[in-house]
Image: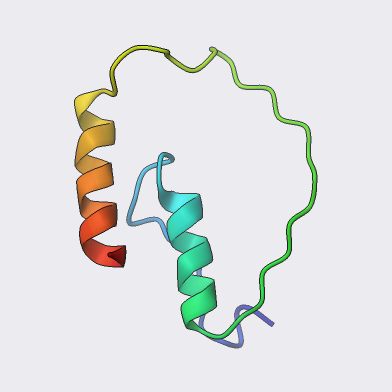
Length: 67
């Protein structure tokens, strides 16, 4: 199982990058990933403007860790 391999959901990053980071961590532990369709409704709708500073900081940390 994922937990037996030492995998945990990566909460080091905010919602912008935590899912991607968690998937990369799983692969680094040798786990195989699967994708399942799901319906998601986001409220409020995502912004279509320039990324906010928190997103940019998260992106910078994400790229530094997983480059």
